[in-house]
Image 1 (cartoon, rainbow, N blue to C red):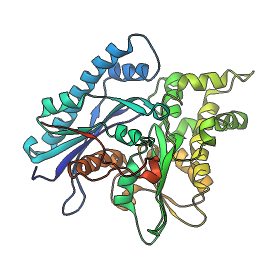
Image 2 (image 1 turned 90 degrees about the horizontal axis):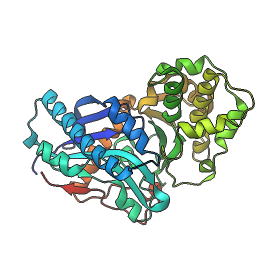
Image 3 (image 1 turned 180 degrees about the vertical axis):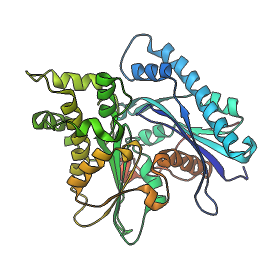
Length: 367
């Protein structure tokens, strides 16, 4: 494995597409090529169905496991074709897989996208199943990207917070003082409820620039009801997912109101929910000026950024200001985790996940 090029694959809780990146780490980190691979609607619907209990789950999971592996292989090979790089020049693919259930209370997390099949289809070694070793060490198994944030974005001249707004939102607090602890955790829903509600009401995949939310009015009673969820009373380390925050749970919340709430007001309130839950998570950490850097799909939501700016009272930038396009941070993180695994280096931060100690994450599936 003399090459130092890796592929990173990320299919997150937003279920919009597969992000594929080609990176190298020596002599320094460099993003060489990117590719966004579409996720067919039938697979998207099956993923959504399997995030909740249902009939014949094992056989349905098995079929999805293979179909997603084939799609991940397509994405990887399309990326390499775009970059004009042959497969033998790649050390490994870091494949996160598609999370179906994240169950830290049971000590497990289930991702689909068989790494054996992915290795067979591409002829490239695969590193996958990153979360369960941290879980086995009594950690949350998430979030895992803060270790990458620390490696790439730490600075000695300012405290920084990197906020990843995907389906779920998570933050990484990077103190400039190296004697202080890096902190990271899932703050709660990011785009997951925003996307689910606009799909339910308007059959759109997402609220472009937050325009629909901006047309509504925040409903304070609904907002307080959402913020009263037990998840927000928990101290870090903590992690969550679609199995906790999903459309049916939102519909159940709305049933508690005697009069219906306008759909755009629900969207405005959900946007406020994401922004305010991030703010409340940051309050105990930040006592002075710090740099705020967004990544993930939510970094493009203009209205959400306005609400974050209102609550945080800090200038907000994206990770592009630090040299990495916000759309590709997570995929790069899993390429980095694959490289760490190949080098027999730890990939978790115990201060973030709560694991008993540093652990080498993921299994290697040879080509």
